[in-house]
Length: 166
Image (cartoon, rainbow, N blue to C red):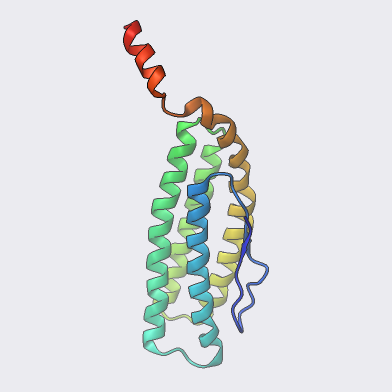
């Protein structure tokens, strides 16, 4: 699965998301791409003229959604890794914290209506996809696949066998 984004005036055409091997996380990453597309469309207008106050408000809304996304997605991803004893979870968690911190810093700049922050947001979102999802997240996919069968919930016959042996 490779998904890409294009928007007139703000080229994100090389931005794609790789299949990380876990369907629910792939869907989350698609949602992130939607937010990036929303940002791309809005920021293209910023290049043409001074932004209207309601456009800055829309940018604030994108950040609210991105922050909620990171809280929920990172928590679920880390919980799934912990459940499987994923060996690089501490490093992965540290990357998540760094992404959260940078996002918070950028949100402050956007709240202050610092126009130059828009370029920094673009770069941050591109690096998030390229470095974190397409590199770091793809490393856990094969591990999840090999661990999934061993860690899946017991089937009815296994439960019956366990209850008879107690």
